[in-house]
Image (cartoon, rainbow, N blue to C red; front, side):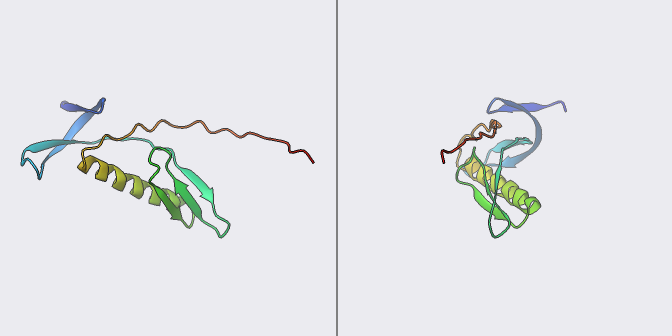
Length: 107
């Protein structure tokens, strides 16, 4: 991949060019792969509620883990596309460290 463009500190291969509706100038569109942590919370009735810590506006649901992850992927993609269209920076998505803490309650 010869040509590349830098966006938000990422070096990305150039995939295609599109016309920007506002300026009618060609805009570079680059492929970008990002990982986002998702939290699947089991529901009493079954299924999972899904949250994305880096994008707190996302709360979605799936009847099983596969559907929950697919719904999260779609929601992330839509939010990122919307942010990009509004010219907003995509927030960093550091992978959180999740640990368990055990406590003992007094009787």
